[in-house]
Each structure stands twice: as structure tokens, then as C-alpha cells.
Image (cartoon, rainbow, N blue to C red; front, side, top):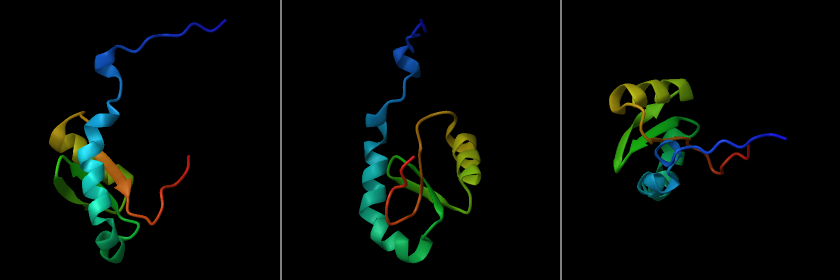
Amino acid sequence: MARQTKVPSERRPNTESLNREQAVYETNLPRWLEDHRNAHILIKGDEVVGFYETRDEVLATGYARFGVVPILVKQVQDSEPIH
């Protein structure tokens, strides 16, 4: 029988912490679809840090600038991909 390991609360992802970033994304998405469709965006708090060609570029920039903290990284698209 597999043993479950509890993840300490300080290491669990906090989905509420990205609500602000998600609101910024949703508010601006119609405009961004016109100018930045398929680009990857980095948002921290209310700040739109920038648009990038690849997810790797976004992550490298985000972690270099903010450290390993929650950041919103999305590809600007009409709909969310299902994984």
C-alpha cells in the first residue's frame, strides 16, 4: 500500500495568492489578443512584467527578478488549454 506524504503548508501552492494576477490577465485579455496573441506573459501583483516568446524565457525572467515565489505565467490565447 502506497504511503501518503503530507506536504507542509508553507510548501503547498497557494492558489489564492494569484487571484490579483488572474484578474489583471482577464481584464486585459481582449486587448492582448489583438497585439500579443500566443505570446507568454509574466504578471506579478498588478504589474505586467512583459511578453515573451517562450515559457522558459518567462520563468527565467520571473525567478531571476522575484525569486521562487508565486508568479502568473500564461500564454495569451482565446481559451485555456486542458492538460
